[in-house]
Image (cartoon, rainbow, N blue to C red; front, side, top):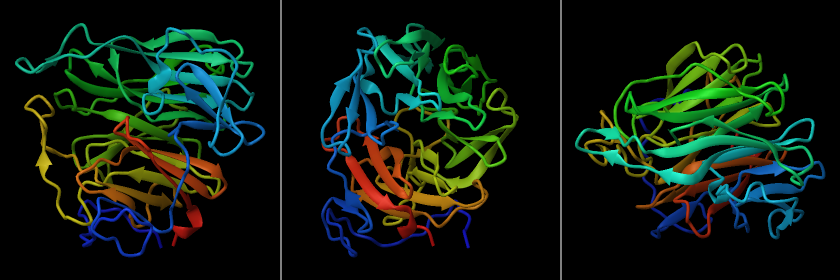
Length: 374
């Protein structure tokens, strides 16, 4: 029977290891023995093409692999020579629509600038990281419908889906210069990325360059509603519910999913279950994590920044209840954050940690859903 995820952590004494074994030893990294390490240098996002090969955006190039990522070949043309898509990952998402169209929503680093005034605790007016979208109807041969979705400064986001109605929904965050904190919203396209409509803003309060509502991920529920999970500094995810396909978010509330100040990845699997990968508020090995903020302008409330452990849970009832969280990997004094989950085939899950961004090689794991579901 699935159990709720409670805020209090279960303290389990574990010692780190870098081996796939039952009992961790004393080295820096450990991976659950039910996982295997993927021999792949890319960390997603990936898209399944019609022939089950993988598509990947590597810089401005659309790449294809027919051998599970062991080798890649460029196809089509560059997305846009001026677009710095080397950061595509947790700062950009793309998908292949049901009609075969590639849609990319990304952060454009052309003219990027971030500056925060610690004395006044506010962003510089020159902060810039714009959110754009672009499309291709011919597998990357040509790219069209390039458009700006949000000006100003925006950041990492974990959600771009096509709903059962065929609409596209991107869940994104934005640094509001007047509120001096992060807020989130969604963009909805009913015409395969040609045009987009923005939803209402979701504001959870706070102040600081890492405060507010941040880095949302989104999924469609079985009844057609959408659910967004939002990173906060309140030791748990908040969720928002939309009954009109992401155009409006009227139910906004705290969940009982304990979480550190780090984003989650939420996916609907072929089995119908929801899968959640994230960093919990406390460590199962070390107990309560110190509630600290990095600088006085970081956030109003001290938040857990626990990122040493990556946990996995499943839900059979659209997020009302979750299986007991299971730590699939940890790294002492390290960071296994900004996860990405990709279902390579039904029940075969690839999970990546994409932080720090220059991790070589990336944490890349393959596991079977059936091995982790009670």
